[in-house]
Amino acid sequence: QVQLVESGGGLVQAGGTLTLSCAASGSVYGISDMGWYRQSPGKERELVVISTRGEKYADFVKGRFTMSRDHAKNAAYLQMNSLKPEDTAVYYCKARVRTHWSTLDTYEFWGQGTQVTVSS
Image (cartoon, rainbow, N blue to C red):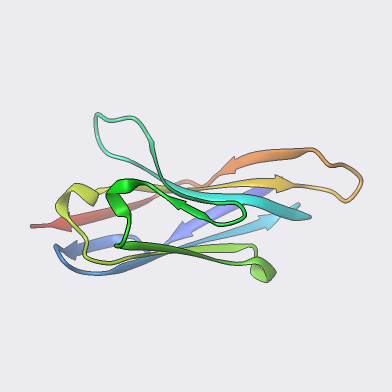
């Protein structure tokens, strides 16, 4: 089994910065895609950024958020600058994982989410 654990959320004032972390553990042979999503109350979960051969950002975070990955640690990070109240949401990490050397099959796993609250 694979576990994804996010951390780094919290309360920050508008204009501030937070950095989220996501670490994958367990049966991880390799990770292809990793991404960050968010969900606000009453809204559907939406893509923030996805990393495959490069990073693709949602328009509403371009220029403010930066995703990075540490492949050796099976980890991903999301640096969020110039935060706005509308960025308030639960942020989730998702990874597409190859779980064993004997198979090319990959599976999606989600973290439990971390709350980000931006006050005005």
